Length: 167
Image 1: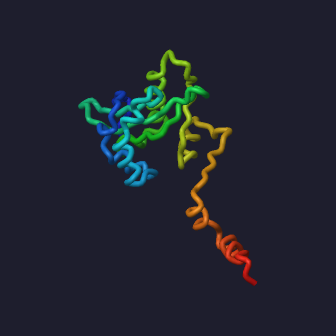
Image 2: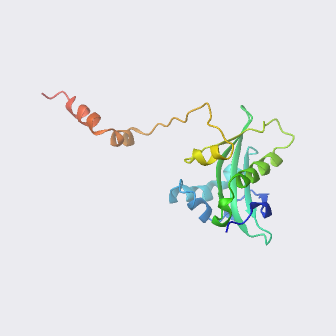
Image 3: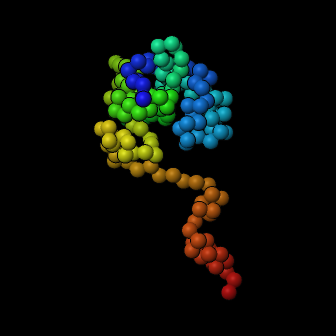
């Protein structure tokens, strides 16, 4: 049975080393090298006043997850970079998301930031189910030429091979 996030407290921190690596690993979107760089260079992120980093702690002050966000000063929006909780707290749905949003709103109280929270996710249906909506913006990615060539459909690769000028 899932535990309620209501008993968790979000404590702002400035050191990624206070976050157990298992919470980054369970997100599934970070390669091991990415996680190493986050811990290695984390203080560069947290020195910025626009970075918000929290650990979720239980009543015994044991870390049960983390929340990492940044503030875009131009559009006055909070952007969630990562949110990860112990599996025992993950089944609480809307309550889970509200807890994170409330921690962020408390951190920015009195600032110029709107109460808009933007979340980048591979699972939009889960967020929409709990009141989120799709953004009017679409994320576009560019990869280096080496990777783009490898990802072309077979017919495009054969066309580029045929266009070498040889008959």
